[in-house]
Amino acid sequence: MHEISLVQAMLQQLSDLAAANRATKVIKITMKIGQQSGVVADSFRFGFEVLSANDDLVRGAELAIISSPATFRCTQCDHTVTAMDRPDCCPKCQETFLIPEGGDELILQQVEME
Ligand SMILES: [Zn+2]
Image 1 (cartoon, rainbow, N blue to C red):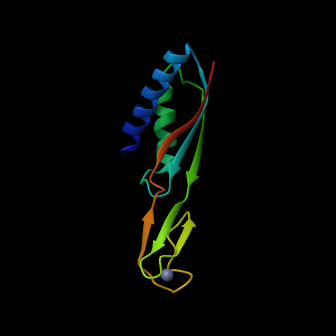
Image 2 (image 1 turned 60 degrees about the vertical axis):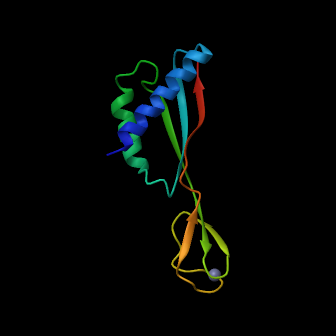
């Protein structure tokens, strides 16, 4: 489960942010996870619950996860579709070979701390 190492990286980022802002407590974290990032939101949340329990800075913080869609480009007609899941085919020409673009981000979008 590589989400654990991603959560560790996020906690490190939070710790740096808190130090920079002289904050001692994280209240709420908003993560943006792209549909194509390969990150399972539930696993990420589970990893967060496990690791944050031993971290004074983030213990009890609320974790909000926003799933962001990807854009799929048709290899035939160049039409693009933005969707959470890969469409079966291009809505314009029915081509089935669509290439995903974007949607692979993992971003610490917002942090509330005090
Ligand atoms: Zn098409």
